[in-house]
Length: 355
Image 1: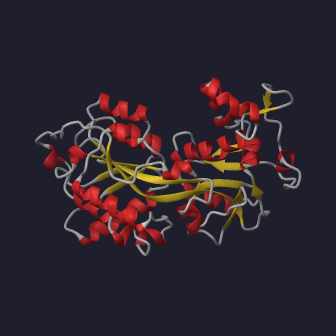
Image 2 (image 1 turned 60 degrees about the vertical axis):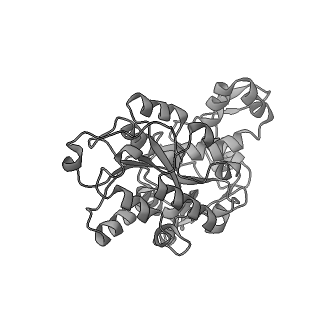
Image 3 (image 1 turned 90 degrees about the vertical axis):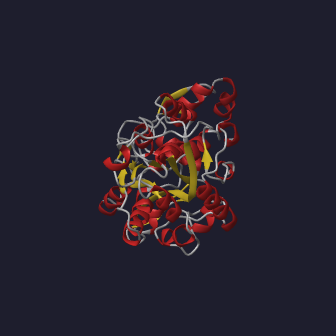
């Protein structure tokens, strides 16, 4: 679980670029905050936006679920009222995305960690009870799997869960999950499939010699129908599981927390996703959630600073906050305080300080 704790806890400016000024017409051509990004963060951003709109004189921010990858592409297209002020993400922004932003003049980016979420593997309450290891997940979903002597790969031959491991159900593998544009999928591949993949000694050793080959083996999901891309909408995956007890789904913990009467979780490596297991690093498929904000838009787009203040308030993201009621796993109190102060002051850090 080092991936959760290795990230800085402050709001982070990804470059030390000067403050960008918006065109003069910007102050009158859009009078609301515009947010795009992760379907996982969407419910949290929406409830904050609704409360902000009701409790202030500003308009309710516009929130769109585009997926983390799609949202970051929109976010990086430029500065100004034609482009989003904020992108939400269920994974960390990649250096290549920071570079893409820089090429279009988006060089002042504030990173805000808002809390944690687990990626749940679940099925209908009417389906069998599954317990999977990371290795089971890899051998069920990888496009190619090792077979025989080291170095030999074959197209995934596993059609049922029992083919993956003796003791699992004699039931066809049918997994509903997010598309490649989703941050949930990115993190699932890195934390679940890659972990399972590295239980194979020769594949684990390949990482040092040939990173591209390693990622091709460990990160490529099969395309023969066993894995079904079910879109960015996690609620839709839950609905499909409710109607199909034979299927298994992959989605954010907050959607499970809101649908416990319909679906049940799969233990991964012996651990069930709970608030405590996610917060303290016991559940292996967990990740931080982020907002990325254009500093150039703060104090120019009406309500943007106030929206950030509301999002990072204790009444929103605290242990007893309304986002916790929606399934967000809060950060520890001292970390929340540190981030909130950094957001208030728009503190800036160099890109080198991310690591």
